[in-house]
Image 1 (tube, rainbow, N blue to C red):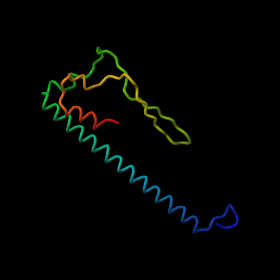
Image 2: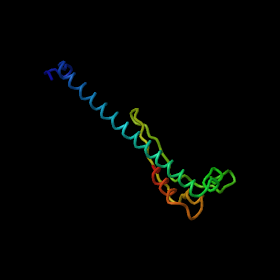
Image 3: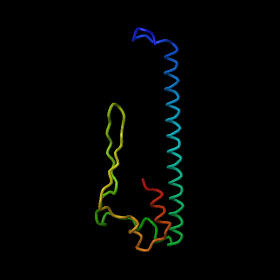
Image 4: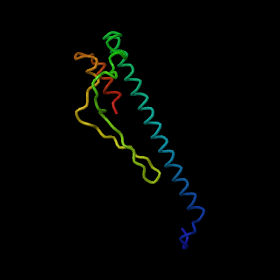
Length: 123
């Protein structure tokens, strides 16, 4: 940099822009890697759910087993709080204690694939 603090040489500006471009490319690569991981988890979870439905039968693993308005209330096992600082949103994940296990909606003895689907699609 030159002696004056407000002036930068063209070479310094180009170096800074190169560093910013590389940082942006690395962040885009990380984002794409995370999206592929999420997609893979969802696909694997869906396969395990399909296997569970095949093993247990269509009526055992269906939307009829999900809670309805007349079911007893329960709290979410995970909640998210969003905090925005300097135009940057950050999400804080809070796990609550004493939540209900959704696998119990389908009975006590459920196939291992249903447990695998829960683990695969967990946050």
